[in-house]
Image 1 (cartoon, rainbow, N blue to C red):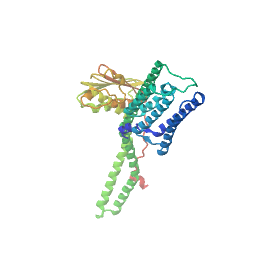
Image 2 (cartoon, rainbow, N blue to C red):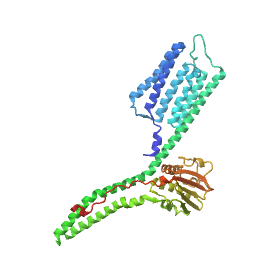
Image 3 (cartoon, rainbow, N blue to C red):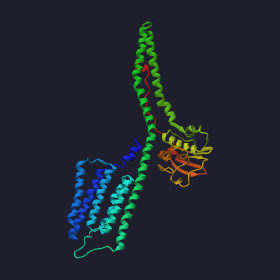
Image 4 (cartoon, one colour):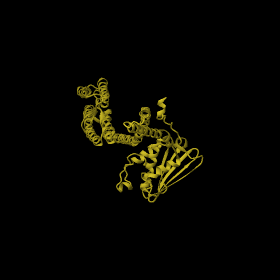
Length: 441
């Protein structure tokens, strides 16, 4: 999955969504025209209104027959379809009173749909069409259908107020929906990046399991080969024609069996020991890769109730490593990692002596794609705030809570409930490689 390809493909709106909305609009428009004609007035242009409604229904039938239900429209095609719907509605409003029609507010619907699903430039184009159309309706439109021998006209001031309210409602609603959908899309992108970050660790875990399974499956035939080689050596005795070959075959089979035994051992006993990680070892494993960058890295651990011993968690290691790396990047001379624990909680504070977090973004730290330029970016380093978001997300998945402060340098405090830090995962159940003598029986 390519993150940026997904960000482009999300603009491809599903055709079925628009056709269903259009059927709803066609039904509502037909009902409004029928009710107006039967109960209020028969003098307005009913036939042209029904023709416009029929055009919308005909477009729906054509699109349904021409494309499958799963077809997705390109942004340009979606703009054309939404533009047609907007012009059709403006045409109906022109023949039924213009902005004096109570349904004139529905002009905002197509613009809102575009703001939620299409690029900004297309939404702006639709909004400009709506502005021009509503302005023309305010100046030029047929009278509002009304009772016989009576003409309904809005006072000029109310007319201007309705025009203003329609445009402001359209603009405000479109902007609001755009902001909400943008934040949701950014969050989806960042979560996708988080999953990609963990993909390597998951692949390594999968390869480890496959290696253990392969070692177990190969153990039995290899033990048989070793046994046969030993029997051949006994039968052939000192026959010079075969002695070297038989000895070579037996030695190489023994070597292969030793290699498989080591693989199995790494996947069971050694791995089981490595998966259990005391808190002090966790801290050292996190900070060790960052000691060679000219910044003094120190740590302190204190607490009561015995040192917590947890399970090796790639998410915690990556998240803490990212925070330490960030502290090293911005520190002047030193970074200190302070750890404390008791019977209920485990707390880790990563602090540096740098300039601290900018005051205007400290409350937004941890949000994806934070675009404010930092000192590292000004120096040529990249970054959109995604690294901190990934670290925060991974640590929160492990049960931690994070807070960002200035003391006066930057400080990040991570707090876990101790029971979650010490959670133990079940050991893998992998059978050992069979020995050669086990086959002989």
